[in-house]
Every structure is written in C-alpha cells, then in structure tokens.
Image 1 (tube, rainbow, N blue to C red):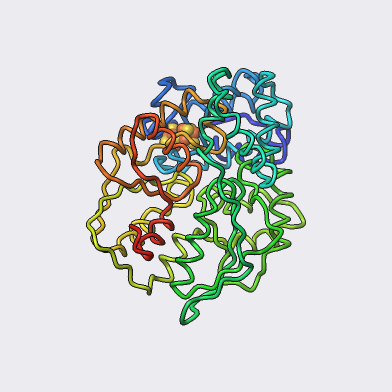
Image 2: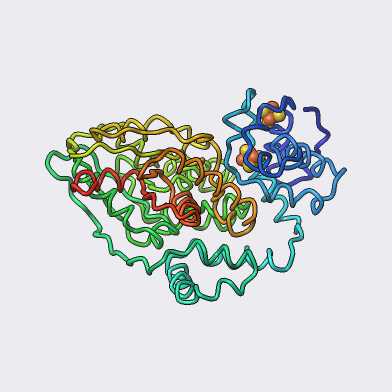
Length: 421
Ligand code: SF4
Ligand code: SF4
C-alpha cells in the first residue's frame, strides 16, 4: 500500500510502522480469520481496516482519537498474521502504533483511563495482584450491583483463594540429568494457578531436567508491552535479566503470552544499550511445551482408561510463535488418548491480556462461541497452554453449565504420571 508517512515525525518506530503499512496489498485474506471482524462485522474492525486507519493517522489525515477505538478493539491475537499471504508484520505495527498513541496522549473515557492504570499497576506485580484477587473473592457477591466492566473483573476471579505455593530454588532431575533450565513463573499465572508451574517442575524432573526457580524474578513485561507501554516492559525485563542465570540450557515459560512477548525483545530493546543483553536472554527462552517436545519424553506415561480431550491453540503460541505440532506430539505420549478438533480452533477465545476486562461485550461473544464449539466435541477435558485462555474458557463453559475440566498441558501430563487422569 502506498503511503505518505513522514517516518521521522511519528516517533522512534516510524520506519517499522511505514514498512508494515507498505507491505499490505489490501487483499482481504485476513478478514475471515479476524475474530473482531467476525463479531462486529465492519471493515474498521478488521486487520485491513485497522492498517488503513493507522496509515491515515500517521499521514495526518485522520485524528488519533477517531481511529483509536477501533485499534483498541484489536485483540492482538495475530490470526491475521497467519492468514496474510505477504506476511505483513501486523504485530510490530500494532504495538508500535499503541506506543505512538500513548506518547501522543490519546484520549480515553475517564473509566477506561483509570481501569488501564489500575490493571497495569496491579497485574504484573504478584503481591499486589494476589491481594486484589483475595479482596475480589471476598466481595464477589457484590458483582450484580456493578457496571459491566467491573462485573467482568469479578467473573474472572477463581471461586476460592489460590494457594500461595513456595517453589524450591532447585529441583533436581530424577535419574540421568539431560538438561538444566530456569523457570519463569509468570505474574498472573503464579497467582491464579501456581499448580501449573508445580506440574511443569514435576514433569521435567521425571524426564531428567533440573529446574532452577530464580528468586527476585517478576513479570516479563508482556501485559504492558502489548498495550504499547514499552518503558514499563523494559524495566520489568531488565529485572529478570539480572536474576536469571546464563549457564542454563533454556529459560522456560509456561504461559504462551510470556514467550511471545519475550520473542519480541529485539523490538523492545532496539537502539538501547541493553540490546545485546536482551538478545542473549530472549535467545534462550522457550515454552515448556516445545522444550520438552524437542528434548523428548523418556519417562513412559501409563493410563488405564480411554480419554478424549480437545486441545485449544492459544493464539500467542500458535499464531505468534508458530508452535502448533509440539503440543499435539506431547499429548500423543499419553496412551489411549484421542485429541478431538475444535471447530474454528484458530479463532481467539477473547482473553488477550486485559481485553476481556476492557471489552467485555466482544470478549463474551468470543468466549461463548469458543465454549459452544468445545461443548460440541463431547470431551471431558479442554487442554491448552496459557493462563488467560484457561480463565476465559473456564468462565465461558461454567456460564453454560458445562463441567468440562480445563487444564494446562503440563497438568495433564503430570496427572497422567500420577495416575490421576
Ligand atoms: S490481531 Fe487478531 S483481532 Fe487484531 S486485527 Fe489481527 S486477527 Fe483481528
Ligand atoms: S491479508 Fe495481509 S496483505 Fe492482505 S489485507 Fe490482510 S494484512 Fe493486508
């Protein structure tokens, strides 16, 4: 697409944004793949429409405040990147544009402005987030008296206080040591579902992998990065770079959103003095699923029953990191297990960071569609790889009175090893 963007007048990412706009050939292949286009049905809520809106803003022919509501409604799911024949780097464009919008003081409603400030001041910090979750669970009975966006927040809370688990600094491999890794616990996940990291450690140990859990680690910066708040993300990332050891075979993430954001540190740290350090760090980060798949399972899994499960591809694992086969290969190590396909499996469940709090109407529609398609499979288990998807899908299933178990792939493997699956 031809453009007249003055790259030096639109911030440090001007060239990145102009190159992305230029590479779009306006073919429209991305439209049917886009969840917001499917739900809202208008061009401006599609990838192609958003690229045109961003181009017009950057060229100065459209006001940022007019365009931004449509950019805000983008989930950042990257399904459009998978569908795009010329591989437009839409993710780079979106994050760069959001950064530009923040720096240009884009206007939000009073409620949205403070909701964002509140969520980004709480969620990446485990102690604060844990406290808020506890208070939220106590006050859950008040949800019916609240506006929709606050109600959505309460709906996503777990039914009971998650146990605040302490992790040993080192968990040794059982038997022959085949690898040594460091575990990134994740901010939201370590509060809402610490059991996922516990399961990962047990599964890794059984397969000869020593796991270190560095003290002083925090959020990888994913939540704020995807919102275009790069300064906060860089600070969080630098804290992790300080505390994680370099002499490990990999730094392991168990939430797809973390791995996806860390793989984008090259853009986050471009033109900064810490670029090399950031590249060294992100170069050894790998999702638990692909790491275990690559190393290979050596401890045989034994189960006594036939089971059918549905596997949901988390957008930040499948679209953003291209990891689609590894989870299925890992699950096939469980004997007597059949993996059933979910209709429209490549479509986002509506979670997407804090999207389900900011845009509950769109998120609810996507959550319901996902739940309906999962229920249609007739399975007892829905398995996935990202805490955001797990929370969103579980809430959507329970709203439809479904008891389908929602588990992380590491939990399923762990359950199978322990004879509980
Ligand atoms: S990232 Fe997802 S929601 Fe956003 S334009 Fe692309 S497909 Fe649509
Ligand atoms: S598929 Fe790619 S090139 Fe075609 S309109 Fe969408 S973003 Fe542009």
